[in-house]
Image 1 (spheres, one colour):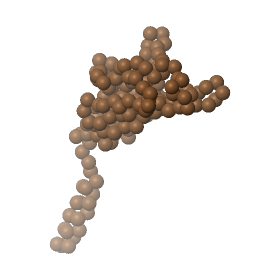
Image 2 (cartoon, helix red, strand yellow):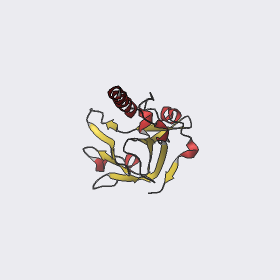
Image 3 (cartoon, helix red, strand yellow):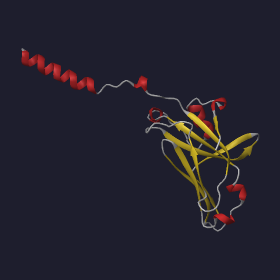
Image 4 (cartoon, one colour):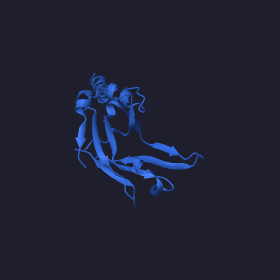
Amino acid sequence: MKRMTLILAFIGMISLQSCSNEENTDTISEVFEYTGVNFLPNDYSVVLTYPHSTFNSDMVLVYRLSGSFQGEDVWKLLPETYYFDDGTLDLRYDFDFTRFDAEVHLEGFDLAGVSDAFKLNQVLRVVIVPGAFGKTAKVDYRDYKAVVKAYKIKESNVVKVQQ
């Protein structure tokens, strides 16, 4: 009888170890906006430091304000690529990120010759999506409006970060 109790206790311990408590997971999405971003010669990159560190499991999305249409801002998800008329690469925005910052950089064959409209006074938004959301949400990340709607981000909660 002792052996049977021991076996049942062992099976119970194994099955309970797979339970997790998701209530302690931080599930607040955030948006950090950086204005007046300039991609200057030599490295054509900029580091966008977050107001606070993020978690290793968080997803980072970077959007660039590319203009407006009918009074609405048009945000494009990076990486974003522009081509010359002959089909060769003109300019590409791309990024890398850590828990503390995102580095956005330009790539291309003649960045010095690219119009200043693409290099100076850019507006970028970094969207932090907690890893817990990535398991359940079906979102078109190319669509900034769909992202903020899916993660319940209000425009009034966008954090303006000074560079």
